[in-house]
Length: 273
Image (tube, rainbow, N blue to C red; front, top):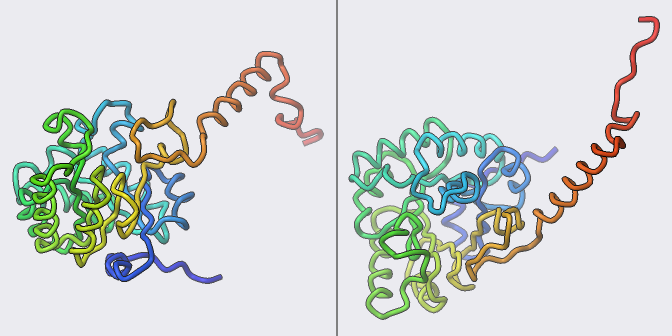
């Protein structure tokens, strides 16, 4: 049996030269197992605050919760590089706080890298974390932890001033040591220009086709939410919620009419034992 070769950070960087990167979110062991052979990167996103916990934003997610979910994903991934978000409140106070949070996340959940949001303001934290030997993925554009500052989930970088600032932030993050950059909900032309200027790979979500890879939230991709995801950039490749609804309805019906459990679902006594 051929041994599976795990993806490493240098492998991700090398893909800048060609071959689109595939990144999906995962929040538990089972989903990691199912996605591992398809994804280059599994992101344990703080989006779990919305799709798993039912909050309106990602802001309530704690470091302990991220460690819990990231550990499950790490145990389920043999091939994909596992990256986990540093949640809101764990790096906003500066490099010492950011480093301690990143150390805990890596030590206690066995992920290979951490991700944080922001531009020039977080570069010193990126330097501190990478200096400790922990790879950092950066995130620009629509950064969900800035939900209140942005006034909601809105496309970023549409005017010349904000587009120029995003490009400066991207270059600064690369210089600070980030190995990859997520670009979320920005114009496709801006994402193309940022991708062209950077030596590190860009991974888009709502940033057009010219990034070096793409990412989706798994619940949005497979239609696991109670309704279709509202953002334009989401594509629902199947509707698992419909299959679950049919299965649950069939189960409930069989229980109520006495058809389940049938003899084949029951255990017989051992005669003469």
